[in-house]
Structure formats: C-alpha cells, structure tokens
Amino acid sequence: MKITIPALVEGGKATAGPPLGPALGPLGVNIGQIIAEINEKTKAYNGISVPVKVIVDKDTKKFEVEVGSPPASALIKKELGITKGRQGIKEETVKEAAPAAAPATGADAKKKEEEKKKKGEDEVKKKAEEEKKAAVTTATAPVAKKEEIVGNMTIEQAVKIAKMKQSSSLSKDLKAGVKEVLGTCVSMGVNCEGKDPRKIIKEINEGKHDTKLK
Image (cartoon, rainbow, N blue to C red; front, top):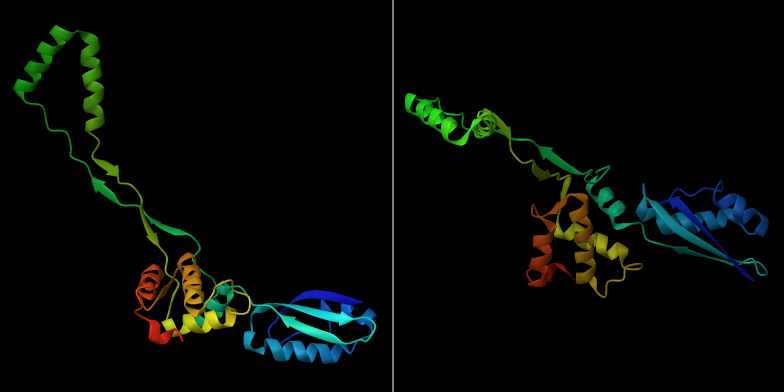
C-alpha cells in the first residue's frame, strides 16, 4: 500500500520538522534520506516555495520524491530580484482650466431684459442657472490611468523560466511556454526587452525570436 504525502517546502531547505517530519515519522522510513533527496531536487528553487510529494510504500518502506513547479510569477520575481508584482493601477488626476464666463455687455443686458419680458420670470431663472454653471473656472479632467512597471526581463530569461516550468506546463512546446511566461509578465507589470510583453508575443508569432527559442 502506497501513501502520498504532499507538502510545500522552500527550495533546498526542507527539514525534518513540520510539515514533513510528523507525517513521515509513523511510516518508519528514513526521514533524513528523504529530506536530503528533496533538497537535492529543489536546490534550483532556492528562496521559492516548491510543491513536493513523497510517495511511500508502507510495506517495503521504499519512497519516491516528486517535485512540482513553482508558479511562473514566483520564478519571475526570483529571476528579476523583485519582491512583488504590480499592485494595481496608478491614477493621475489632471486638472485643466475651463473657460470663464464672458462679462455681460450693455447689449447683453438689454437682450436679457427683453427675454425676461417675452418668456417670463421662470425662463430667466433657468437662464441664470445655466450661466452660473458656465462660470466655474476649473474642472477636473477624466482620470488618466498609468500602468505600473515593476521590472524588465530578457528573452533569454523568459526561456529559462519556461524550461523550468516544462514539467508542469500545458504548453505543447518551448515557444508556447515562453508566451505563457510573457502572459504572466503582463499581469505582473513586467516588461520584456523594454517592451510590453504583448509586443514580444506578437514578434514570437512572427518568428523574430526563433533562434533564441531552442
């Protein structure tokens, strides 16, 4: 009978303590040997939480260690040395002057008086309200949104991350895997080669980076 014990460990730094130690202890296996194998297989993910599975045969005490792949976002942050991705959208409020109402001339006053006589008191009040609104000297323009950029990676770095994700990715080949990584860059606020990752994806589709995607 085989038992599977899943855990999340820091790459290369698993210990015999929780969560693995207490779960493995009752199975009578060599915990130190298991920890050593986990650390060897996850050392490339130093500083990143990695999903692992320890599969133990209760009868023979033999075990297997399966290492999953960290999220692409975690690998991108590790590769670029950043602690977090984009936290949202920066908003910049821009104020612009609205034209002030022109001063009334003698002719305007006379015209208004005539309108008052012709249209009645209610119409004049309505006109006055409109002039009052037009006299506002400042107005707030629509909010201008600016996307936050937290880092920049090279095509080579995107390829490196895509290769690290190959074991768990649904992408059919390296090119698709790199585009998957670049898609994550878009949501994180990370550029590639100084450009919006979507532009690089378009270039990949056009075959402009084929020599690097091997």
